[in-house]
Length: 212
Ligand code: AP5
Image (cartoon, rainbow, N blue to C red; front, top):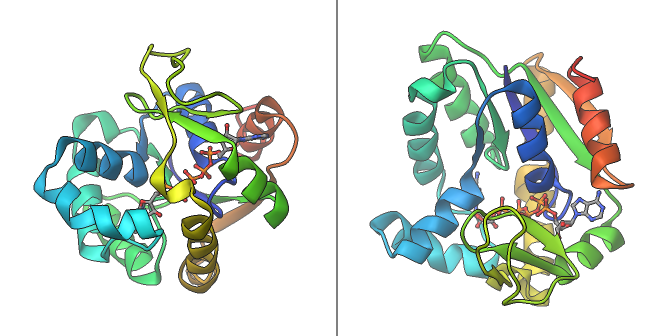
């Protein structure tokens, strides 16, 4: 099962990717996590991505498609994957479609998480993430420890107010039109109410995939 998680920054894609992937028994692939790890490790990929990420702009399409090609060819992705924030432009949707077609597969569904804008800003302004495993938290101070892996919690540079405003504009102008592309291509799109508790949202997402 190859599922695209879609939605604006703060909609809960990262929060939902882990339980949904665990329930389906497939890996989660989050381009944001891959890029942040590369920035932290100072690799060539990280050097390419750092400035754009800190401003809240998108990283170039060829960089993202390179990551996807490599990741989806791995044996652990052979049964599918949960793609978190992977498709953010029409060229990325087209490129991903070609990559998966070469592997004899297709995107099975796009789950689009719906949350009002004021709630998005509230979530992002209170977020810290584990610098090791990237689990997001709300209302926990930087420096406290992650429940999952014991890593230190940090604030993301792109959660500063100016970068958040830019990310919302980038989402509306460059990413939201991708849904129309999938619609025209006949891909199943399911809108998920992503308000309420994370557990409630997980239930809705799994229900939409026929795995309650
Ligand atoms: P990325 O890390 O993917 O950021 P994003 O898409 O902006 O999404 P976020 O991580 O901000 O939000 P989310 O929807 O995952 O919400 P979360 O679960 O954390 O990408 C970062 C950057 O990398 C991009 O800006 C870009 O530069 C680059 N990049 C990545 N992929 C790219 C691509 N394909 N193309 C080009 N560039 C790319 O939740 C947010 C907060 O809300 C957390 O605190 C969480 O605890 C809380 N929360 C979650 N669910 C609930 C709930 N139900 N109720 C209350 N609080 C909740």
